[in-house]
Amino acid sequence: MRPDLEAGRVAVVTGGARGIGLAVVEAVAARGVAVLCVDHPSADPSAFDAVCRAAGVASALVGVDVRDRDGVRRAVAGAADLGRVSYAVNCAGVDGLLGSAGMGAEEWRRVVQVDLDGVMFACQAEHDLMAEHGGSIVNIASMSGHVVNRGVTHAAYSAAKAGVIHLGRALAVEWAPLGIRVNSVSPGYTLTAMTRTNAPEVNAGFAEQTPLGRLAEVEEVAEPVVFLLGWRSSFVTGTDLLVDGGFTAW
Ligand SMILES: NC(=O)c1ccc[n+]([C@@H]2O[C@H](COP(=O)([O-])OP(=O)(O)OC[C@H]3O[C@@H](n4cnc5c(N)ncnc54)[C@H](O)[C@@H]3O)[C@@H](O)[C@H]2O)c1
Image (tube, rainbow, N blue to C red):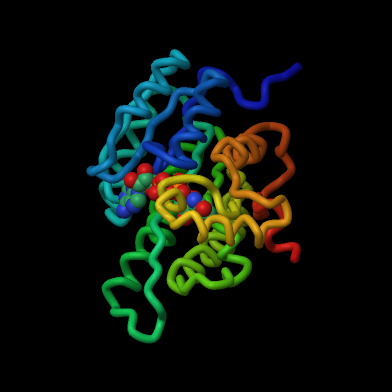
């Protein structure tokens, strides 16, 4: 059977040092795809290195804050040294749980700049590498870009994630003539550093609000991302795939 991704090609993954991004790195590396990871300079590269070494693929991790447009452009351009860049997954993101009324401009900008500007800057840099041969970009949005989470105050995050979903549609239309597809995945509550630090009763509440009755494992988000990256979704662009255990269906 034809493999879903082309071995020997290169994927750019932002936020690939841990969490959902690291699971995406593991999923694409297992298919023989080399990986260039862009993550915050403070990120620990050891898990990323171990995963790529175990899969036997070429890899590099560059420490850049995704809010730094020029830095992202330079870092992503380096992916061409690993081969032809056909895939990109933009996972880098932060939450921000301050209530809206008293939120200062600095906190608003921190969240929106990482979660929305950072995705745009990465997409622009990835576009430049894919313009000649085409490619597939998947942005990690959130179910919070579709609905307001009960009991959680994170308006900046929700607004940024809704922006990521619609940005994907706009880029998909602009770049379709180049053979570049752009889609997003909107995870529900997923077990990563973002949620593992919650009090057990908080995650139990999230599980209760989810029809499947639990939080997602990172691999359950990574595999739908691979579907959107690869040829099996070759007629899918400008769409968002909810991977939320049914959360938004209620
Ligand atoms: N965990 C969840 O429940 C959940 C749900 C929906 C969506 N998401 C989204 O999935 C994505 C991954 O989240 P996660 O849960 O794996 O979180 P995580 O905190 O485990 O990983 C986030 C990664 O992004 C990197 N990052 C953060 N700020 C950065 C910056 N300014 N520049 C460069 N890199 C930066 C971090 O270093 C880290 O490697 C995020 O976009 C998040 O919003 C997560």
